[in-house]
Length: 316
Ligand SMILES: NC(=O)c1ccc[n+]([C@@H]2O[C@H](COP(=O)([O-])OP(=O)(O)OC[C@H]3O[C@@H](n4cnc5c(N)ncnc54)[C@H](OP(=O)(O)O)[C@@H]3O)[C@@H](O)[C@H]2O)c1
Image (cartoon, rainbow, N blue to C red; front, side, top):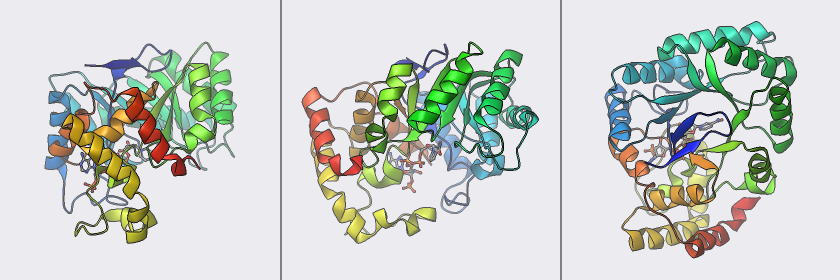
């Protein structure tokens, strides 16, 4: 199994992870309606059987339910797993003690004594500045409650600042988790990809399948419509789906050459960027297995370049 180091933190994970936002979440996803605990447990098991041991969650997903489910599943897993979770910088969390109490609650839901990767979910720093926040995270590393520190949705500048503050404590910033796919490439134009490479920070690519669009299962003539929060998303409208047809046509063509699926090609393209770990969501075993199949083979340079070209409209 291909593995990658999370920046210079010493934490090593599989080159693809599984995102667990949809596990327990009924605010955006339809957890409890067309899929539930049985299906997501099967997704977890299928990921492990396919060699994927890296899972991403957050304290806010399903109001803690995603962490609770991952905690239960990993307790019963014969294979050790690496869990990444996230701290929500809510405006009412104004003091460093908020960080230690959030860490303690995540540890309890995850049934862990140490969190392998702890990320700041978004860069809200109005009432608790980055210095206080990063130093509170550094304290947790020193206490041993977390191993590696990450951020999420940080700009290039914010990432540099977080990196510098942690460096003063001798702690590397491991990752920046950002929205990155063939249909979301602003991280390239905004300097995030280049800055992460310069500073030795790994990027975790969230929504790497553009929330299902890059699987090709949603298309203008398909009876299948997305559920949950995506019903309001214009990208899933007939017009939106027509716009992405050139990308999907190329994905489908390349997939047929390798006997892979469009989703696997889309994830393989992200891995080909280097320093990027996609964390696709999976609601059931079939999706987890399929997403794991993005590993173990490689698109050629020319195919990577063709996908880059067809997806240029999404650089802005
Ligand atoms: N840091 C942040 O701010 C942030 C934001 C968003 C997400 N994330 C993280 O990134 C992870 C992934 O992002 P995401 O869930 O937004 O988007 P995604 O991975 O692009 O899409 C996931 C959805 O696509 C469909 N899908 C996935 N694999 C499939 C397959 N092989 N075949 C067919 N359909 C498939 C499923 O929904 P349907 O079956 O219903 O189509 C699934 O829920 C999340 O779980 C979370 O851990 C982080």
